[in-house]
Each structure stands twice: as structure tokens, then as C-alpha cells.
Image 1 (cartoon, rainbow, N blue to C red):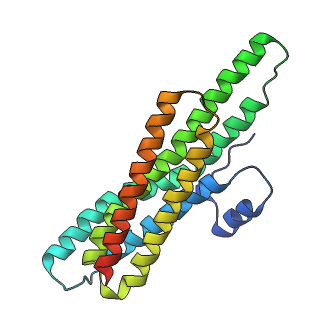
Image 2 (cartoon, rainbow, N blue to C red; image 1 turned 180 degrees about the vertical axis):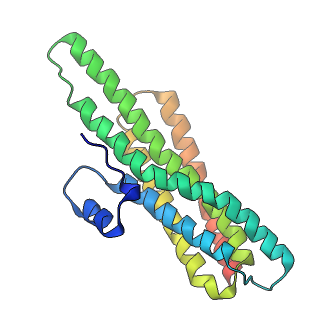
Length: 208
């Protein structure tokens, strides 16, 4: 199958791709895209010359936040493609032949590897969205009051990205048998969602 970069598509073509009946791109790519757009809005606000009160320290804090947000945006954009690639690997693993005992064993190993990779990808999306929400706290506290709605939308997009990614993590974990791995990932996902909720509330409070 020819490799397609959804992250490099024109917007209208990307929307058409999401609308198609093809297996990819799907919800996992959509969650990463939501996170990338939310992070981009924060970067925009952080880069504006006008800050909340005009104090020099606000400009410095926003510049530092922007420097942390840029790599997160790039990572989330990359995850739009990574998620689709991971799911394609799952599809290919399930298509492996299972005539003999050896083939069935090899197929199971391939499925397990693919499902673990398909779990790690949305987990990375969760991590990036949570870190971006931490940046949202700084942007909300220091950014121009005229950008309240921009920051508010960014917060909601990042929460949607993180929570959607967690759904994918949970679904993919249900196919695995590695109990210690499942427990570790579930614990981390829960902590990421809790931390994100706290940061989102703090950022919303700073917008008032």
C-alpha cells in the first residue's frame, strides 16, 4: 500500500479522507489533529505582541511557553500519520495466514506487536496533549484578554484530543494479554487525564 501523509494534505483533501469509508484515517488520527490545532492556537496567542497587562515578564513567560509548545505541535502533527500507520499494521497482521500451527503462532505474535504499537501511539497523543495543556496555563495567565476565546477553544481541543486518545488506548489494551503492561498503561493514562483536567481548570480560571 502506498504511503500517504495526512499531515501534509490540503485541508479539504484531509476532510475528504476522514469522510471516506477507508480504514484510515480514523479517530486516532483525529485526536492527534485536534491536539495539533489546539497547540497551534496557543502558539499563536503566545506570539502576539500584546500581553495581558503589558508587563515584560509576561512576554518572557509566553516566549518560554511557545518554545515548549512548538515541538509538541510538531509531535502531534506527526502522530496524525503515525496513528494511521499503526492501524494499517494491525490490519496487515490480522490478514496473515493461519493454516498451520506455526503460522497461527507467528500471526498471534504479529498481532500482539501491532496492537502494542497501536496502543503506544494514542498514549503518545495523550502525553503531548497533557503537556500542551500545561502550556495553556501559562498562555491563559499571560496572553492578551482579546484572545480569551482562542485559548478557550485550544483548551477544549486539547481535552478532546486527550480523551479521545484514551478511548483508543483502552480499546487496544483489551486485545492484549500482558497484564503488567496493561496495568502500567492504564495507570499512566488515568494520571494523564487527571493532570490534564486540573491544568484545563487552572487555565480556564486564568481566563476570567
